[in-house]
Amino acid sequence: MEADPKMLERLDSIAERVSELERRLNDPSVMNDQKEFVRLSKELGSIRSAAEEYAKFREISERIVEDRAIIESSKDEELAETAKLELADLEEAQEESLKRLKSALLAEDSDDQRRAIIEIRAGTGGEEAALFVADLHRMYAKYAEYKGWKIDPLSSHPTEIGGFKEVIFLIEGKGAYSKFKFESGVHRVQRVPATESGGRIHTSTATVAVLPEAEEVEVQIDPKDLKIDTFRASGPGGQYVNRTDSAIRITHIPTGSVVSCQDERSQHKNKAKAMKILKARLLDRERREQEERIAKDRRKQVGRGERSEKVRTYNFPQRRITDHRIGLSLYNLERVLQGELDQLIEKLTMADEESRISDE
Image (cartoon, rainbow, N blue to C red; front, top):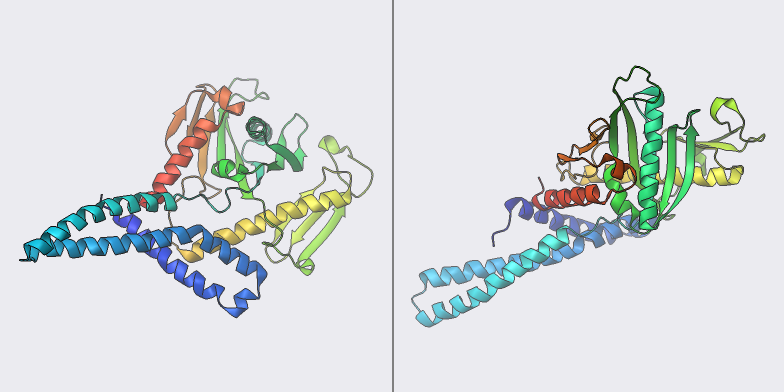
C-alpha cells in the first residue's frame, strides 16, 4: 500500500512541529507561563501519537528499500532469500503502520469534547431574517434535546413578532462542540415570509458562530483591559424587563470585542454570562491566529470555514436543504428543522476526515 505524498508531507510538518513544541516546553520562560504551557502541552498531546507512528513507518520503509536492494543486486542466494522473507513481513508491517497513521491523523480535534457556545445573528432580510434566527435556534435546541444535552441561554435580543436579532446560548454536554462545529457560517433561507402578502419568495440570511467553551486557565483577562457598563434591560417595544440597571455591557479594549447580557434580573449573573461569551471569543480568536501562524497553507477543514462563507440553504418551496461545502441536497427540510441533523453532520464529518487525510 503506497502512502499519499500529500499525507507524507503533512506528517513531515507534524514531526517538525513536535520537535519545536518539545523545545519550547523545555524553555524556562514557557514553563513559568501557565497559560502558554497548557496550550502548547495540549497541542503536543494532540499530534504526538502521529509523529511517533510516523517515525516507525519511516524506519520500516527504509528497511524495505534495503531489502529490495539486496534482492535485486546480491549474488548471495541465501542472503537474498532471507531478505525476501523479511521483506514480506516488513510490507505487512508497513501496511498496518499506514492504517495507524491514518487513524492518528483523524484523531479528534482537541476541542471536540468541550461544551459549545452558539451565536446566531440576523443578516439580510429584516424581520424575516430575525424569524429565521428563531428557526435555527429551535432546530439546534431540538437536536441538543435529542442528544440529552442542556441549553443555557446566555444572551438574546428578541423582536416583537417572535424573532431574534441575536441569540447566544451554551450547549452543556460532553462532545457538543464536535457536533455543532460544522454549523459556523452563513445560513440562507428561501421562502414566502409570514409578513409578505404578495406571495413572493424572499431570500434572507443568518450568521452562525460556534465556539468551544473556554476553560478558566486558558483565557486570563486583565481587569484593566475591560470597560464595563451597566444599563436598564429592555425587551421588544421598549418595555422594561426590570426597573434596575441589571444589564451588562463588557468591552475588551485590546480586541474591541463587545458582549452584552440582559436576560437575567441579577447584574452579577449577567456579568458572569457575558464573561463566559467573551472568554470563548478570545479563545477562538487565539486558536485561529495560532493556526495561521503554524501553517498558512494548512488543510481546508470542511466544517469550519470563514464566517462569511455561505454554508447552507434552506429552500421551503422545494422542501430542500443544501450544504454547499459538500454539494449535498436533502429533501427533508421539515425534519431537519425539527432537529434531525445527524445525517448532515455525519456527511460533513466524513468529508472533513477525507480532506484531513489528503491535506488538500
